[in-house]
Image (cartoon, rainbow, N blue to C red; front, side):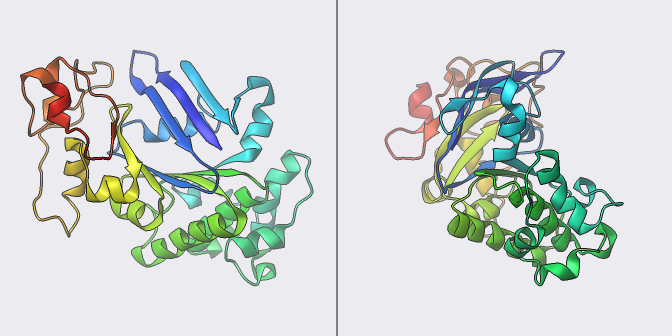
Length: 295
């Protein structure tokens, strides 16, 4: 449904926010894109919906390369759901107008009541005349999702969709996304730094570090049998982890990406070869370990 091929996004000054990423989201599939803040996840998400222009490489929807002349159509089919619903909603618009705005801009008929109901706001008519400040954070996020659903997309790109919500509400929004996948056949890329979110919602996981995907596989493979030291360090912060892995320092400056494996300056098991040999994207299986590639 959605794919990148050798995608690069380089900002002025040489910062390589997205650095040769190949990523796939299949029909009816939820993929979690996991990594620390500043690793390029949000830039990649915005490139997928056409809000950031790639430096090189391709974005494809249902196998067709993204055509700049048909960007409006692409943005209808691939909808972005932002982290902060309060910031995404116009405080002067009612819920009805917020949900109807997208279809109006695209010249489409709209079913505001149906979209709100699909997003779990029932009875929908009770919300028509409300303003964002009259809603809870979870209700605001449901309105944002309803606005995306009003355009009948095939893919949702959700950038930290529950990060600003209370813990008691997060599960409800994640359950909603799973329900939309099951009922409507929607595909989704969910961007997060939370591996627990990936475990609860995703079919596959892609782990991103310093602009590049370093490991990918099914949820069970990546979270139960991680192979990349960075993935292991991310997992070690979970309460169930027997050992905490503390990484030294901050991620390197994206304008000065280290040679070899870009994770080696912070890696707790690095050897001399790590500064010379780059790692391929590690599939989550037991065929080869990280150090076996380097050595």
